[in-house]
Length: 227
Image 1 (cartoon, rainbow, N blue to C red):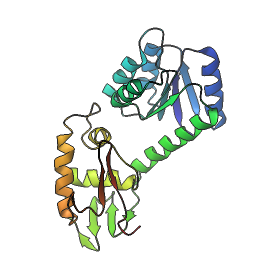
Image 2: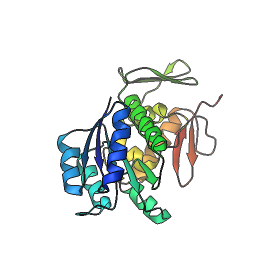
Image 3: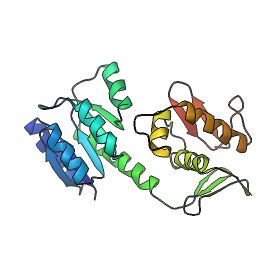
């Protein structure tokens, strides 16, 4: 069970979404306005926020930025605004997922499960194995083909985050938020520099990658080179 804050001004949509999430075993607190939702998101310490953009007191993008200024809670935006520039702006403002109305309850439930799984993985101390790469989050140790890697704290955190999402493209903005705790992205050049150092220690280059694969314009992913 997770604690979910739902911010939606449409009474019927709010009721349907709240009932669906409660039916999945989640504890749902709902609000019809941005400021009320902000209070729930900050004081209630939820595991997930589901929010609309078209709110009566503040635009949802402003609410998103306000939440992101104080919390890294996963956020799913549900809205009728489907234009590409709006989607991009919202994701860049800190949303983790974006769902355009009308949507099926089943699709929302699946996205909620995916984000909660990701959150559980991020807090796990279980050893992660990707090919010959082994990461022990509890001991903060990493090895490649049985040889210990001499990593700085940030290099280790960067490798751990990518390994937890092995096979998934992670944006530089997301890496800045999770590794450097800068929710608005910060200087993405910092990520590039640390990726270069990490590649060197993994015995690869951007031109001849093995574990770290750049997806230009999107982000980077860690893969099993033998997979």
